[in-house]
Image 1 (cartoon, one colour):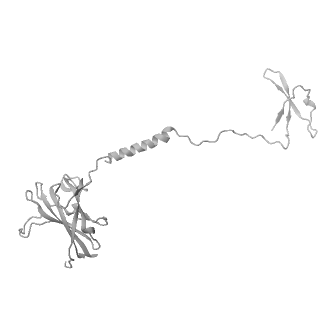
Image 2 (cartoon, one colour):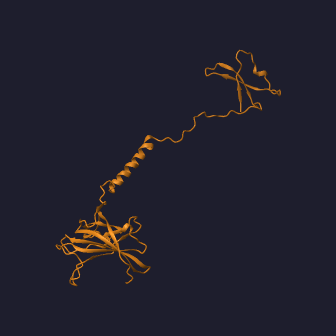
Length: 265
């Protein structure tokens, strides 16, 4: 590292006679401007003082504020995500009017559901012997009426009906719908409802665990709304049948009569 010391202004400083502290001569040099005029003399110190520290380059820049994001990044993207979510909800039918609400009925009240006009009147529960892992069950039987208003013979499906207690701790589908034509009916009487005939008595059977108890001597019974369409989930055929739909449901609270236990199969 070389240090250049300019000639002091207004002095008769003569560099040729300068010596180092140790007595050795120092080299000198002249400085000239671009036009050739002499500006002064400097001497070149080949050995700077031992306590001299080399200058350090210091960058006096402000602290890094971190990455900068445009307004599009901070505001536009969240708004775009919200718009996309709303579009997806709309495409999936999230803003359509709900059609799955239950119509609340009174016991014995007539209601039309698909091909039938029905009533749900009362219910009985009875402890019976079960089978398999359930030595005993509670059999719930719902009594009502049904009339076929379609053009072909048909019978309601037990799986269209649901029953539960107040706390909905146990919800069961119906097992079987039976049509009561009376004791005098011929043996070859069809199991379906014939169009044009008056309403016939029907029963819907449910099987609950032996621990089931109807609360307040009542039970909640519901029937899914049905329509005539293709209800197959495995085929794309055009075959239509009556089955559950999204057209709401019907619900009624029925009084329950507890019958004596039946230990016979």
